[in-house]
Image: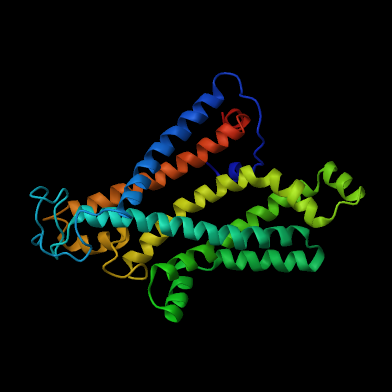
Length: 292
């Protein structure tokens, strides 16, 4: 999916000829299955884990079996326990970042869309600066102020993504404000808050949901990258990024420690992106026709 396709307004409509909606639904189902299985793993980890996160009684670099489904790491910790914990951290990071990005981004985007003249130019330039600001550098600044925690990583990722969401929302809202029914609503005396809540937001939410789904996948990848660099959840929290960092020194002798979190990370991101693509094709069947 290209940026131009994501920016197109999504309009619910009838299914296009040739089974367009069916293909969109199939993509959505596959994405939900992939992401749902990992979500189930994360949910189970809230109530049950095979071993304690700091249990090192399994023996160093033990292979799969003997009570350890995926074996153990270089400290003797159960890898399956770490993978389950990492799935929970991935969803916490993704959902937390998207909520922050949505709250800040939608607010800034709507305000920027209503701005005129120099204020519009100033807000647009401000959003461009935020988008260009590296997430890693922002994370370092926040970590320096708050210490390396999952909350710091989520805050940094959410703030970085809020600028992307804000610019996206600004474009969508400006398109809606140019429609005749908005002019009619304003002429009839409808206030701006009621116009936003009653006309603007209902018309941008399908495209916004697709964009936020994509941001979720990016947030999961960003959290893994920050944890790999030691800027995410501290031990004994087993983020997938931290697992990859710890397993790189023993990859030749115990590759499961790197392969397992790597595969789950890829599957989760693919699943979320398929969900976003499926939502777009289902809500706007004509998008598939425009792409072919």
